[in-house]
Length: 65
Image (cartoon, rainbow, N blue to C red; front, side, top):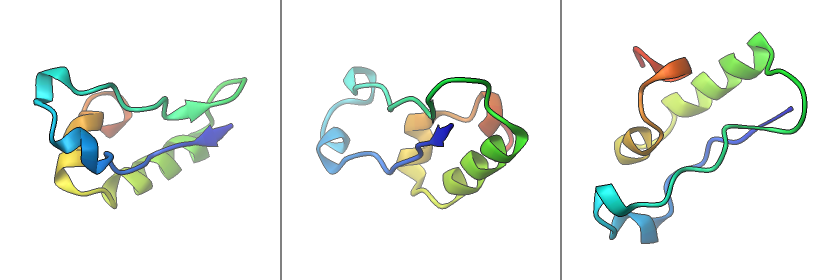
């Protein structure tokens, strides 16, 4: 399983929030995400800038961060 948490591209920041493309899938590959995968995703999420955090949303595994 590959964990992909990346900052929002600068070009997306120029687009109105309602019209921005979705973020890439967080978990890529086959199989179920493990607790280690989820913790890694949460740790990477904490390192993002505020606008990128908003892009990913604070639901699901990011709730409360």
